[in-house]
Length: 355
Image (cartoon, rainbow, N blue to C red; front, top):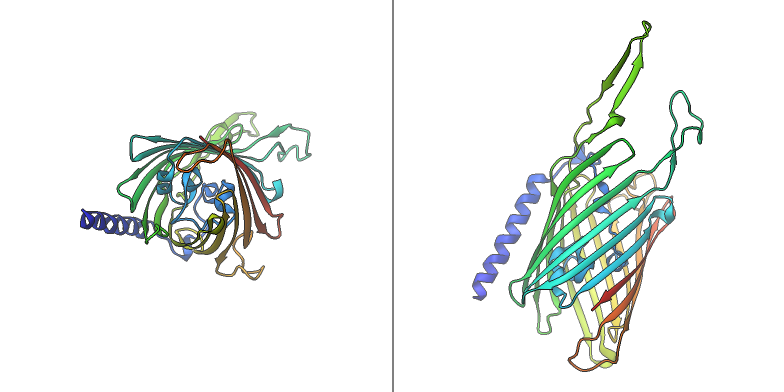
């Protein structure tokens, strides 16, 4: 039986790496993908330590880094997070997630992530003044349905199907993408974890709608309408590989987790992440992380608005008196900070109910 599971892990790893290689890009493709909102972590817990928890993500929060972590839910969990992207100047992100165990080994997940930019003044060639033509409100949204399965105490896997929509008042685009991941847990106290996840493998997207047409009147007062075709673009495929180690201390039920991960981006520079999470009494968690990317230390060579550091915290409030071996529902407040330049830093605050 153990050999069977080892073979399953190896086959899964080879399959994920092979698919990633097929989608891997080169320097000529950097920045040519679309739907880059799929690369934004909408959850406060994991973003507080740079999204480094590919190997040890747990519950709804794991949907972004590695869907296999959904299997650690043994009760219903509901989570909501609001993110002020670049201090709100880059838009507002609202994320809602629901996780529900099914059977003895499976967990179903559902999430909705919506990104809005407020009202933007409409300007045209003939009327460039702001406020004279009303406003429009772009929106980005993805809806995900997930299933994760616990194959054994050591091996967990999951798949996540996403529908992506991007729209304004008269132009829209729709696409479908899939995430898949596995986690491997070992060690005397299940304190050593490895994970791998392939994300955003999907169909090309393109835009269509009335906004793609143009009406012109020629010198003979003949009106003609011309429709332009939008070029298609690929999904921002990436591969996450990570590991973590838990240092466990009996006094005050303390835990210190050290984690690291590598993200191979098909259309962007690769990311190297490290992070720490400290927990006491399973009530208070403190996090810090750093995401490194080539050229990140210099403004003229940096290819991301993030400068690397992140930090966060969670406070779990039990809804009842704790008893040994008895599950107590909790409400958890999460917060994360992500440093950025030259834009304002991003702040996320969330709330989770674990029944």
